[in-house]
Image 1 (cartoon, rainbow, N blue to C red):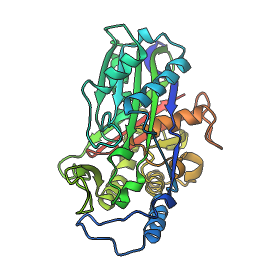
Image 2 (spheres, rainbow, N blue to C red; image 1 turned 120 degrees about the vertical axis):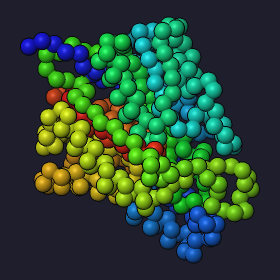
Image 3 (cartoon, helix red, strand yellow; image 1 turned 180 degrees about the horizontal axis):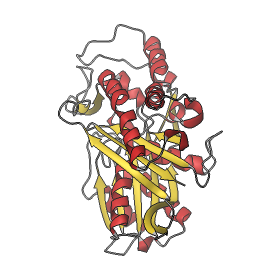
Image 4 (cartoon, rainbow, N blue to C red; image 1 turned 90 degrees about the vertical axis):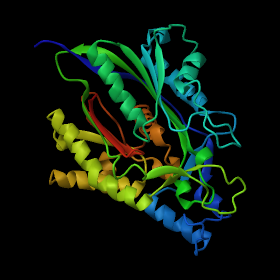
Length: 360
């Protein structure tokens, strides 16, 4: 059998913030509806309902010492060391993020130069042919970066690529919007390399879709829900949570199924589904609908590792940090072995959805 080129993950790394913010830390918050009216419920009741809907009890935030490019760099150092490669051999550095570097105490995006350029500078890479660029693609950004890297490798253009997902959502969170309790911070990095093999390995297939005509405003930037907010010109991350939830349930399972069909893989052969940690209840519902498509039963707790309950939603960082934690034995009861087939999937601003099947 002739050999083919495959994209294989050879190293992973992550930066897990140290500041733990519990739900009870919001008890003194004042929450408002999107129309500016104070929510007619006690803060304790709001927080309890939030936990029931999302499964989030805690989230992790970055300290004021670091910017998004800093934590992206920290995760990159780990991934490069884990892959045991010479950083000068990297052909691309792709950094997925949504808000660039935001200085603590401000609400302003800084993306010039690109975060990828900043990470490359911090890594002290001299090679001018290591191309560094950013990828703003909502929460599916890291996974889309992996997909782009696969195209580069399959084309013969590249042999080693670093893909990073990093965000600090705590600095774009409206303190008067209950939805903001979802958001967290973090960074994850992955090194992909070209590998010749006569058997399928690494990335098997992927599928991406963008539904913009009707769904582009599910996530958007807007002013504080509090009409008397001290800085009325500040913009915060907003979402139409109910419609987004329904959109994800209707479309993510189909995207995963389409991805698996491209590689002639049946869901029963998949050992783990690593999905964007957006909302615990939503992710469980997505997996149940996926299994319903195949008319089989499964226990989501066995096949879908979750850390959102204590890490929150760190956007582009959720999947790479989760993957890194599993590989390094930091997720109890979850292991990935050589030969296992796993699926990555994400949904977010755009609205964008992507899925990728991978053989370890």
